[in-house]
Length: 83
Image (tube, rainbow, N blue to C red; front, side, top):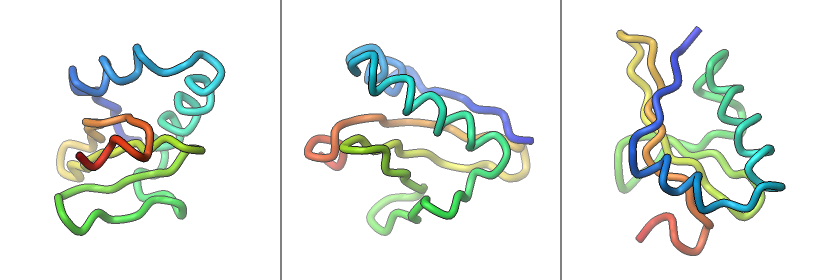
């Protein structure tokens, strides 16, 4: 079981997301506790980490296997997340 850590920037991103989409994003983030390398996750090539797609939103995160922690560092709309 992994611990989920949300970085300050990701928390600010979450605060700006509409409520109906937020519930879906929260549910998918909680799935990372059981398996941080979900079938739907993709390893990033430009930076270290992974991403999961939730509708038009992307959740970017890193995994620390030694500490059993998942660090979520960005949650943005697809047109803004990689800038």
